[in-house]
Length: 482
Image (tube, rainbow, N blue to C red; front, side):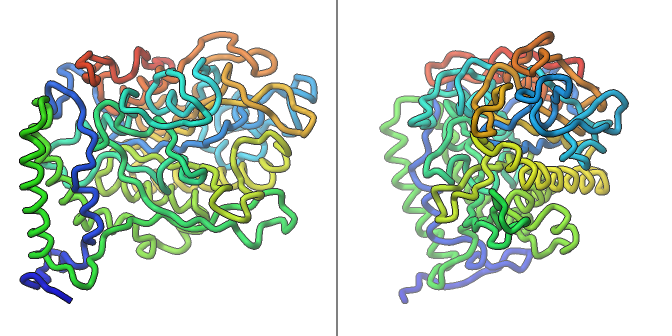
């Protein structure tokens, strides 16, 4: 093989660049960035912004429509066709009850707050509101992210990342949202800020559990763990060859810059260097290495894709990442065993699916995560948010399922910045509509920003150079803030 000045030099941690990066990763460093039309690109914080309680956020996203009536806002006095098959159980806070199949989660209520009156008018399976606060229309038959959409909360954290920080501030696990259905769902992207503020995404090859419990279970868990791909050299790649490619790219970029009319790309070279540094970061490689974790801890999280992703999410926060999405997504189209996919879109067999798998596995991972954070002294500086894209109908359908519903659902927040043991809002007798204290997704976003010490009214410029508030008009929910 042709070698160009072949010298596999080492970093100070003993890792060679040949071990640290692949030539294929140069596609990330190439000219595929979607540069935003901004007047100013420097990181900034609004003077006089709120004091930060949370250093980081871990967002557990239950994609597909988790049913609030069967989880966090039960209605035991309602008729059976509304209340369903589950019973409420006491939590660690007197007077607050949640589902009997979430007993471990119930023990953390003193550190958590439940907002029971979230609603939006953006339509079902629209993932944009939860990540951005925006209720723009998205075609669910072709849910393509657009560069006109606002940035996600994680992307704003990446936008504000200090220039001397050597790890990204936004990551998504186990991979990008929508991968399981061969599409990219809008919301968790940089939007009009540009693709450079998209999350660092893991990669995964999930396999359905061949031995579900019980054996005749209607659903089975996806096994596997996210990987950080592109962090090893091919055999014929050396640092000098890599630098030669960087030099060629720099020359091409200079010609590209001369053809551009917007001054906003002045920092393009700095962004490329950040990308190069990111790919060679041993911190990220270490965070994805679950072999370094105690096996008992891994088992506590769950030896499945969601549990492994949550554990790596905690490790990424420790490595300095500020915002981590962990998706419980559907992967039916990626597997011949997709019929057992534990997706949250439970139009049929809602109670069987939830009882056999979804709620016990969620309960397991949630408890392990909060226990792990508390034991490490991280819960007081980490905000854990559990949300879905919408809720489900109050009335059970003829297939023992619940259908789509955006008029009322719940979001749970715990840890840093949250006044534990609190409820916000009351739904009506069937959890169908808001009775008092309506909350929009934008208000949830504003609350998360507030906990992070980022002013929700801070503006960023869209592609027409208009100032857009990052929380899209949302107001922090004062009742649940510590």
